[in-house]
Length: 132
Image 1 (cartoon, helix red, strand yellow):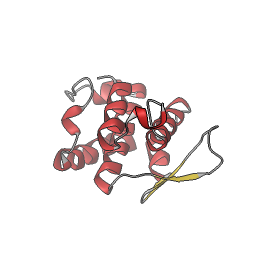
Image 2: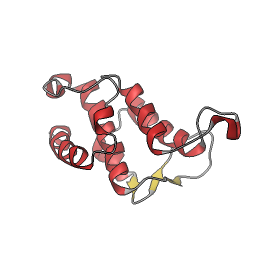
Image 3: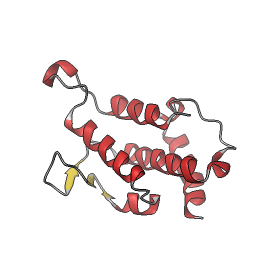
Image 4: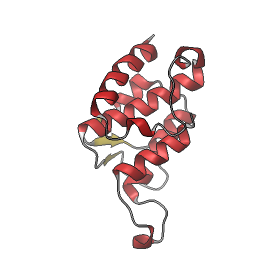
């Protein structure tokens, strides 16, 4: 499993963007998600704290690009849960790889896209691992 690939697949699947619109590979919403995920991961932010920084459709953002502390994220509740799940998986894989080795994930976690039941069930299972 490649978490970077999974994150990019996630943002490109749920937030549509035509690079010709602004000449950039990602739009601002996509960049906010990737930046927040990346910053949190590099700073070893525990998933519990990461999740507290996302409230409804607003997310606390650490960025040199923007002055705002919170940004609106254009995701529905199940997509937000999917985003949190990705972070939990990445965190556990990095710091506790033995705890996640029983899961058979694809390289980009495409099996989770638009599968509400799988996202909810796996989130509950993974969250228990990250809390311990």
